[in-house]
Length: 277
Image 1 (tube, helix red, strand yellow):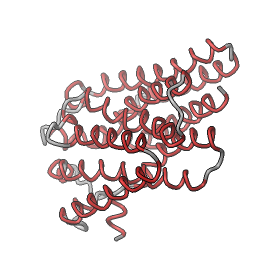
Image 2 (cartoon, rainbow, N blue to C red; image 1 turned 135 degrees about the horizontal axis):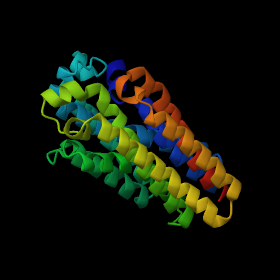
Image 3 (cartoon, rainbow, N blue to C red; image 1 turned 45 degrees about the horizontal axis):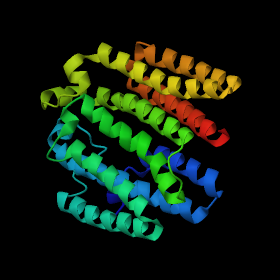
Image 4 (spheres, rainbow, N blue to C red; image 1 turned 90 degrees about the vertical axis):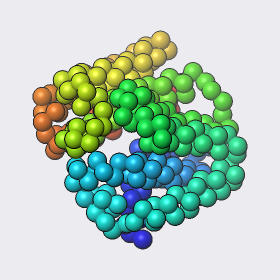
């Protein structure tokens, strides 16, 4: 049971849940039941996408010696993953029915994008489409799930923070490819890093990160919130310095430590901007 839970990588869904929670708290205060249901829903959605990906990537993950993945380590069988997928689909459906049909629709879109990434379409081997799909799942749809769960429609602030988060997430997902590049190349997986090299990927990561920040900063300046925009500019500059460092392409420890720092800084800024707008 512990290994099945580990397969879901529940800690990886927390950043998405924080975005969901920002909308809930802004609209309904600390609705503990809704916050809990959102956490369970996002863990289930993320877990389903991860399981599909682990099954599809098993040969390459074996080449990369990803013993942190239970399927590769041999502690979980493929049949266990199939059973888990069925159970998680029931959880997602029940939570969607308990909330509203818009939550079900956004959840279905999340799973569709995950299936396109890892399923027969195999878009994870298509470079740019891969980061677009993951950016949507990690940065865009959590905001939309929060809006669906609280019953609010599109508004300028929600659109700005969700689109900027999508752009930012599409960039930061590139960090995960560095640790797997040897096995990806050997297994024929055509990530942007394999096809174009580390210099190109680092530049793209930097460009997408600054674009995500730029959209938020421009919006605040447009609203006349000069100080909030200035804070965003400082955070963007610091993130740029971190991501432009040559250590990014060479050191796993650097990517882990400072990549997480960049993520925390951006999402805190996006959430603050949403809350005060």
